[in-house]
Length: 285
Image (cartoon, rainbow, N blue to C red; front, side, top):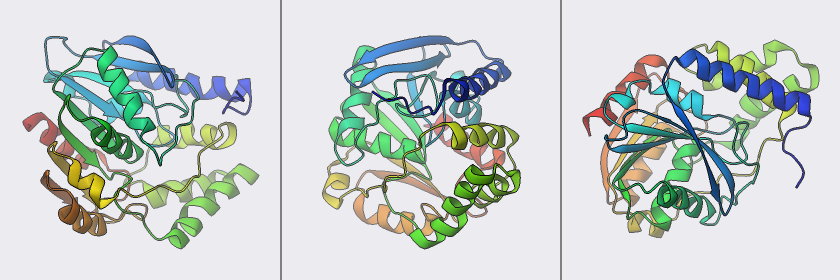
């Protein structure tokens, strides 16, 4: 299988930043590498094993240390399992799964079974939300509750806006390597400046084969089948997965929707204050 990394140099650049971010967190953790039918999966585990399990799933072009930084105090109440999603710029296998079938659900449920976890709480951002919803559709028997922040798979934004504000600046950066283009990209998606995101994504865009496949939308029948309590956090100024549009559809299709939160001043990627609000919701569950 051809590597998703465009060069060994590029891979090392990205993984060096991964290691740097993990070190900066200053947390005690262990690594587990789980062999699954879809490839080896790297998991960072933090928190006391006597506490209830919580799985966090990062978004596209992300990694487990970013997810751990986003919600830094969850280990006070949970044992946290931060998963490196397959085929993303991180330490898991480079197997790209099909978003249209139940592969992501099978993969996560295999991890849950191999880790011998029960009554799992799950939290996911963006593409991580799609992965969690696929898990619930495939088999929700071991899932207690889920928290989805600006998730993929419920609604999509206007593709023309995404083309001009996201994809063209990204391509301009790849072509020219001028920082102003990646800054334009980040300004569209991020609610506040993030120096690590600038450094990390500048390497990912250049050295990693990103997946530009269209994001599918959950069918009403699939949503109706889910019984696990869902807390949905949406961002009003999210151009990828528009918050108000998402909230309207979610209220119509998810019978297990327990709670919704509209972040009035948030773009797709939340700021620290909004992440703290989300964290408090999870810790209160």
